[in-house]
Image (cartoon, rainbow, N blue to C red; front, side):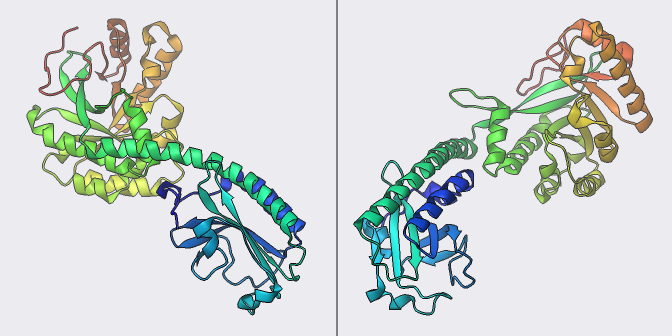
Length: 401
């Protein structure tokens, strides 16, 4: 028996369920069946994906999501040879007592993907004697099963592409294709380096951005693992930096609340780490994050909020997190010397940060004019290509502007 493509193990039919339900109902009504269902074959089992029970209360093992052993079932031979199977009244005693209606005829029709891989079957239970289930009726149901296979083929193609992406990412993840670079954070009064931001880079061909690979990591369930790996890389290199330089590293809320982060930060250099909270979705529940941050602060970990001045890092977010450092988003920094509205907003953030005891770093500074304007507004620290691009170690400690 063929186990069809391991990456289809978690296939669901949600995207096409309404269409498949119409196909199933049409076939069921055409042959006057009492019950119809679509099942997917996986290994030695069939899994019920869609079901029309016609209001029957007792359908035994037939309920959506249930796994039923193929051996001894109607679909066993079909799974082997891919051919339709019909049992009529003469051989229906095997189903006696399994359901709350008499089963006198059963029909199972294979469902193939367009590439002729076997997906599973459409199955029907009838309380009539099944004499009307002639070749013509079976051909109609088989044609409808082809329609179902076409819909499922679209899903298979999506899953095939997903699996190729997953394998590509796992190769990258397990083959040390990831390293860190560091961008200086300077005091805007004297351009002295006070800290750095650690940034991930990936050695891939063709080149893809770090944001692409982190997005992939979260989609494949490895987002926390990748962020922790980046932190571990920073910790392994931090002793090559002057002791008075702090290191910012991006962490998502899910990683912040992960026990893995607390374990990774049980290190002598913890007081030099600044966890930079990054989030591109609205946080629905702050209590777990607040609890986790309180634990981290006991380790003398400082906290920064990224993207201040954008929608995701609003005042409520800041009030809940109580950060030590606010990082002005590049969209606010860009051409701030020419934009009175941006200057007014930055000035308000400076006043606010002073009241809550947080320092400010302006990100994305690319010109002397931007740096001068931010300094005049009271922003203490800056980061951007104007001072230095991200670089590997050893870090160049003299800033030339």
